[in-house]
Image (tube, rainbow, N blue to C red; front, side, top):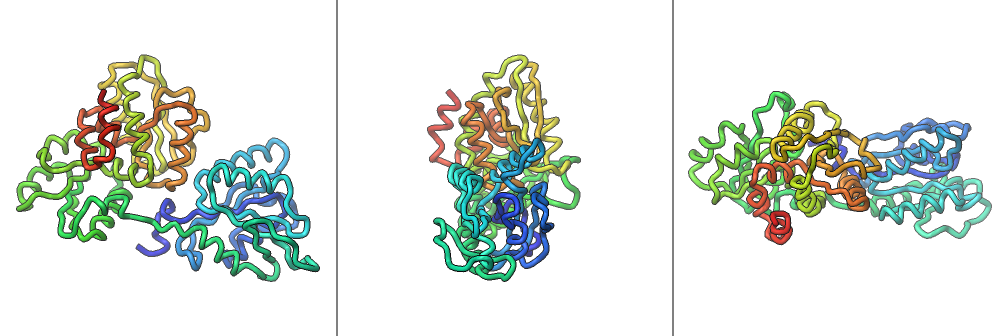
Length: 404
């Protein structure tokens, strides 16, 4: 996979923030070495967050996000500020662009407060250094730069790279479950909604993780599982299935072979599995008329639409026997107010950054709304959740609580 093929969710997201006319877009262009953002002398030229995937040395593949002025005024300005706050949910490193001549303002301090609240590492780019007669006292995390002359831009990039050095640890996805020489069987459902001639992203990532760990990944359709297990010659170390085939795959997989799903592995990798296990108990408590939000991280209509809009609602109806109000969200359109919902069921979030996944889980926790994910919910509704989580002994107490 080349730099340009690196999925957005795996790239470090670098956001540029600040008040109008502090020179955000000029700094973005100086850092990236290309005209990414519109620059003019008119205040507030950037009206929406501008995102671009690129390779930024010395970091590698990143997503650069240029945002509108945080101090924008008027009704449209308020909407832009709200969108800026939403953008922060998926940012890994923030760059606060300030005017070195006038120094920090209330707007800058408010942004710094939000960065700290959201635990986002940040650097302050004190722009327009070419207009200074002397060297001013810099704020903490500050670096003096000039978008006009290029002074300080190299140091700024080095600072950003240092803050963004969160090496992607694929071993947390599946590598710690696989030993060199192990066979791992991956099961793809027979599903007309699946993308043609392509694998879903979690499948690609799991294959990479298995191979990196020295194992061998065998990828098959669900109708080939029984014959494959019989013909392997030895027991696979693990069977991993797409969640929607959980019921069928569990019946075909002998109990002495560990079984889990891509969605459960993704939730563990992105830090949401424990809360998902706690949240799944809410399925049994659903009542007639309850509202359930089914949320997908991607907008690709073939990635998970069928499972999210057809299969999970059907299984919920069959499992609970209740008449439920099912609503859906996709992409970055996750509702800020979750209080109307009795339960949120989220996809595996392969297209979202770990930061955004954590944000969504925190939103639910803050509002006391149970949240779970596709794999955990489907395993629970098929009565196989303990089996699907047996690989993770550290979760045993949580599983027992959920079952009680």
